[in-house]
Image (cartoon, rainbow, N blue to C red):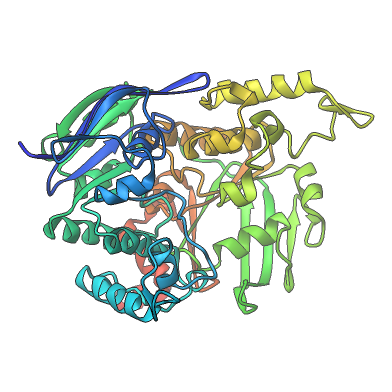
Length: 512
């Protein structure tokens, strides 16, 4: 069997943690190989070693049968290894071409000028060949997240990479962009490339991968043929126990209206109405799901009711009070918690410790401070409780810097911080984005637990399965307008999909 890459008995340690403990991974030429594991299992570290970002303490790496030392990413590039990181490495005010040629600029006029025209032509040809449809002259800040990912793919292809590593490539994509990415991956393999995809989305592994290697808490569990292995078996390899894919919940008993949104009009970042005449009631003891394709008013809705975006007209009532114009802190103090969509931008201060992040909203309250002085002991106890309850894994516990945690563990810390405040209204935006099946199962239970305690939950998610399984009622948005509200147990993916495309319920009935 010809292996294009072999990572044999790899061990990597960081202070207080063994990230990779004797792991072996072998990539065949022309295959898509999934690397499966929970958040913090060591997947990104292992691929970081292959890409030259870390050096292992123990182990051997072979590329095309020859033992190599990959001391930095430039060496990896020379060996034909490229990587698309979970958080893209792009300069937003540069063009696509300028980003792709960074560090490898073709010169003209005796090396005095960069030949961007020649580079753009080559990029255009590569884009066409692999069906990427990227405009070489577009600015990064003006294109979608899905297109930015294609730029990262082109960056690898421009450098003649034969082995392509994708780190959680679908975490920031819409369902349609995910389908397109899967097709691109299959096309790349047909052209002779070999792919490693880091993921914990079992449905996507079944759709695209040939083989799958599972690691758990830094240890190698096994490698299986995807076609012969069920999702349940792969989930068990990943988390070490049986995982239920069905959300177990009893019927809800809605109580009083907790939040009433009346005729909201809100501008988006382009200074046009992102939310138009939007009205909604959220009741105690129910989970209200918001379904829609990304960019159809969900962000404007959440930011306006949490106080982060100005409301042009309309009103927000919360437990009978008009909170349309009050501050973010006042809303938090009134019992509104918010799990934000972007954990780095809105959820955490990345250079603070976990302990500091866990009291961001309450540090000025007793017992965390008294007469302006912080109570470090109370802060540590509070943080330790969240870490233990929500299984937040880090090398140094609460003293760990937030930036050093895996994306999934960062997310669990944020969810723990918001839920532990015991809010009357929990606004959860993409709460399971980037989480593995075990963590998703746990978070869904916590959301339902809040509902069963008589709290109101607003769930905003791009995952249609999640919206259908967890919500009691579903409000569908399209182009900033409310298309309709349906009961989750009386609808299906097809009906919600049509509504997401802008077809109102009565129109659909008329067509029949």
